[in-house]
Image 1: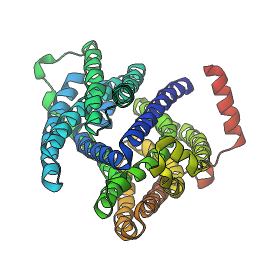
Image 2: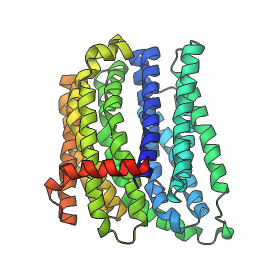
Image 3: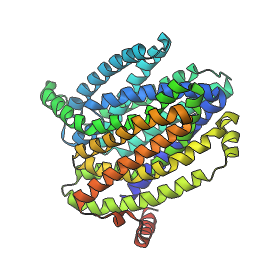
Length: 420
């Protein structure tokens, strides 16, 4: 297991570094306003992808071991196409954006959706190496395309991001489809397609609803800041958020492997102690990473991103407690998803959203991006507290079980030696 976690972590670390490069390139060469425009576009795409998960998402991983991949892929593709069309139309009605923006939103959200579906199916069949390579390639192509345009061609306009994204998602989507075609699954003339689609929808609704609510917790503040301030403020906020959330690669790397193991485990109860051990180590490493990030002075941010982005440091400091709390949140929510108790995750994210909306409404008009950071942290902490209580009740664990122990460090060292 540790080897798989390390491989997954290494891939996510490379991906996080490349993602940092994307944030740096867009901030450095487009400025705070341009970075804000890119952030809002990425947020719009992410919102569409969330609704796509209502007939896919993690449920594709859950059902892939025992179903024909093609019986899962067809309804997932059809639903993704419908959502992207309807979602793009909704953005056009709700926001004052040009037609070219809507065209890029539709095309790129479709590419991202198909890529996500393909890689989820590969992961469900334990093709973790292929999954890691494809996700890493996608970010590398995006970073490389931006680097060529900004540095090589000196083309410093927002549409460059769209053109680079076409390459970054188009090629990996084709490669992932080719890998699926090489698997032994057969179509069987459509037999069982309807039943599989209904089962996928049933699992996805429960599994993915919490993701939609979580997205609102994570990104609703962007729209509040755009409304009460401007794109420049969104750009500064997005840099602080990107740096803080980069630390989440630690809990997400361990949680992904934990989820796959839970799905395939016959004895779910036996996974409680390994889950707690992973949670303790994950919390320790996350807190250390958060403290390191908080130690960065404003001069580093201005030197790296530009003079407009020194204001991102207060955002990072205010987000730090919430980022640390999410380490426990991710592990607990992954456990409940792995055992099929999606309602708990839905309730936790609902509690967080009930904090996010009034906090954004009250704090952002007066305190701007700092108010946005406080609202986000309050949401993270409250939802994590709720989820932690539910986990303890469900498993019999106590709160001290999440505190790192000396034995955990010895266990981690022994596993690292075995994996070396």
